[in-house]
Length: 399
Ligand SMILES: *Cc1c(COP(=O)(O)O)cnc(C)c1O
Ligand SMILES: [Zn+2]
Image 1: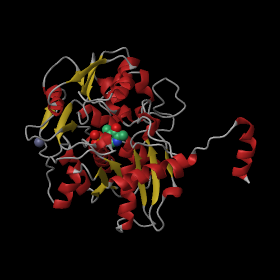
Image 2: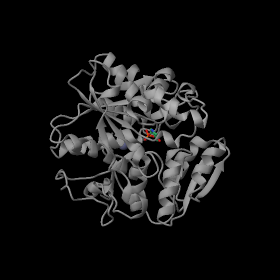
Image 3: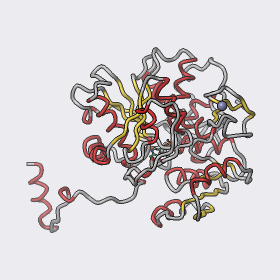
Image 4: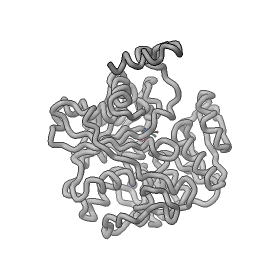
């Protein structure tokens, strides 16, 4: 696994030499071979570290890295369960993949774990969100230097979350968007694990391995996930291609991507019938983790949706916030609005007749609401009460 390949034109490159193909599209690792089969139940428990559950290292044979210890040993292996309480009537069975149980609360830990397992020396990223938290924490766990480049307007509360892991934290003035390519293209002596870096995509494909293994020898009818840079969507597509090549899928699940309507470059390209994603002028949205107007792997993500006969859905701000509340109140799962677009999209697709009651849909809830910072409490659920009145107040509720 020392070769990178372009999904689009097929050109190959030695690993580490480039992040982009000469044609402009992003590269991913050439996993080679079609001999993969589901590992034995006892495999992948962290390589000697007892975790009490499997981690993504269960799939080490198809990863371009080996398990480095630290937090990386605990990445992946997240729960998947059916949530009938949020299923629309006459809609599909919805299975929630809870990525918020990763060590730093999002799926970004998968890509970080594989990246830090492969690279020596300092690691870095361009992010003030979940990816920054993840890289800073994983570096701390392995006593590595971390370089985190955040945008100038990053709120202090966000900086404090990242800073607790003691990385080198730079607040960058100037055109922040350009840093993404700057850091991937220049040799700065730091292994930058940006959103769609090949190592990150390799780690992130394990979420789809886990979903498909849970259904094996069957397969879900569809996988629905939020999309920003397109890194995770690329990983999911790569996993499905690999599992299909290995003969482990009776049929290939359709990939549906969900975006916030206020910033939806991939959905717009899908609706236009284009095969290339163009930048848009996005508006601010509560879905801060997927607010990307010029996604570096957007065209590849679009290709994933098209190649699997899936689609791309824009979710209104209102539907997204209602879905965030629904997941917390009815399924017990706290997520950011950025994650809730996934099940909101399932609801819209069911209403449009794309899913029916015989379908199994896996929705990836990419991150935890507990990382997202305080939002206002729903006033109707809070009651002021004197200590002496607590017994009566409680009895009133249960009677
Ligand atoms: C990063 C992130 C995404 C988007 O993932 P991409 O790989 O950039 O498309 C979605 N949800 C959450 C919670 C994230 O942190
Ligand atoms: Zn190419």
